Length: 202
Image 1 (cartoon, rainbow, N blue to C red):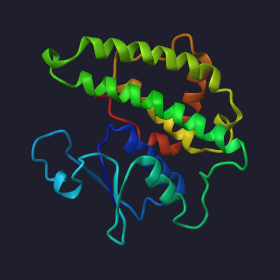
Image 2: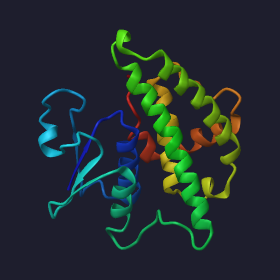
Image 3: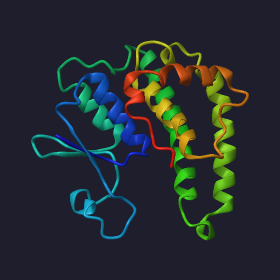
């Protein structure tokens, strides 16, 4: 199988962490893709130009980190990232959606920062900075939820990959006033799968 990524993408990193946690690294070739440039050869592979993008052994291709992770998790018939039973599944889904929300906001902010200075939107940058503060405050409370402190799951992986974007944005300061969230992140970020997939600083 082939997984197309960009090294700084938190969404690609989510899948890369899941691959390592599942022990699938020897079955999947990781291929850097060139995105957001005109006429990239990658667009002939994936017309949307997005990452991550998995091409399975049967030739079927898949987008979206959540979909790819769910498929890979069931590949060996022994899923470990599944939802809990009953009403607790909705709590797990709620937390995963909140994790994706903060990750999305951080990613939008970084995409704006990599544009030429004259093309950046001050309004968008201010909006994302304010949203980051609100979401960090929310997660300072939510991080105490049992689902965020048990066996590794997709909500945890998604949140950790989002928070790690602090390495790519010098203006992203989610740690101040959020000691519980910071301690949680430092603990999960020490896992080998996270160390091996750490995002570049630029």
